[in-house]
Length: 204
Image (cartoon, rainbow, N blue to C red; front, side, top):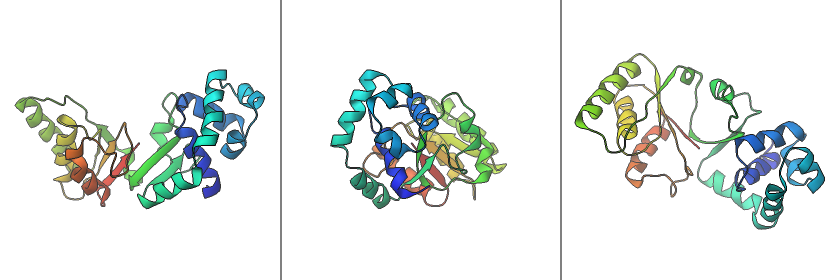
């Protein structure tokens, strides 16, 4: 996808109220996200966007400098994958209201379709730690990509256990930005860097 159109996808992803559902309505209704960004109130309404969200869109047009946002993204080594891209994760596209845009650092590979998600408590027991390590070790040794959320506790343990296996892969799905300053919790930033550096990807 052309960079000039990608910046409009980014713009919409930054607007309060534009999540997967409304984002996908825009993707389906308009020929391009540039046309959606520049659309009239009536066309946005026809696309299924409510009046309050149209107000947010008009406000964002005046406040967000899309070119500067793209410069930030490039500086951080972040790749953008839209729901229209052929390399958008196949299984993710099958869920109800999949994200219309993914921010990615690192690399997604075809073998990541064989994956297992591990999530758990931030304040975990010794037993929880032990079982997580054992389960993840066995899965990673059998070429199963481990997916978790990079949170403290079980999530971090799952990623670490996967990284302990040679050539194993792990993916961290974050609920925050994936630029260096936004990765949370801060104590797992080194872990994120290891994942990005050839062992998987972090996604938002």
